[in-house]
Image 1: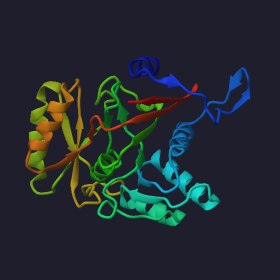
Image 2 (image 1 turned 180 degrees about the vertical axis):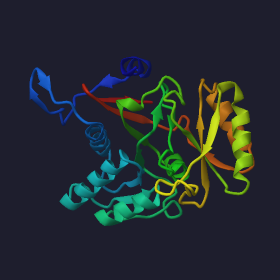
Image 3 (image 1 turned 90 degrees about the horizontal axis):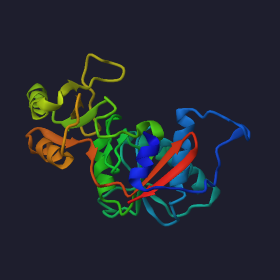
Image 4 (image 1 turned 30 degrees about the horizontal axis):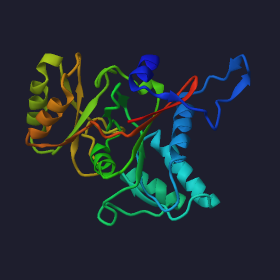
Length: 266
């Protein structure tokens, strides 16, 4: 899957400034998924320059990028950075690292955003939001001149929904069951099943986003078809706030895999 994916993107294997560690030339160390995420995140931060307004993503991969930016600020290698966090969690992390923060009201144009993704298809379309921050992520990343996506190779799929995991839709709490059924009906031919997301600790109550909304997770047995048409159909439903498909938004994709880092640009 990963090799075919790189061929579709026409991406180039770049010289890795921080090569993967190995115990010998013949016996490379097997990196964990988290270590691969860190490699991708650190590569992305190489694009950050002093004086930039930077969108700070949310999730286990983006967390490493925020940590790295904080570290470079402390070392004096980056200066005058303004961060635009995409969630309350990232806001708290950035504050703890001493990263100066603002918002889209003060900085409606963002120089660069760095964030992870839950799925990436061969055309750099994404599924995001399994962490619950899809609305704020999409707002910040849509306002960015450059959007760098950082993933490990397990996130590469042949088509969105292809992992069999959730494609999230943020909805208003009012009559959520009605909205869930309408979402399922949109994609009956794709065998869509919707589930209300519950809290990570208390599974008897709905998960509530930073915006006070609920999330319906959609699961597909088949390809949902034309992504633009699917996006438009979801957004036309009253009660839907936003969905987790990020179409034609990523400008750079950084993938960390067992053989190193691959960078693709649109």
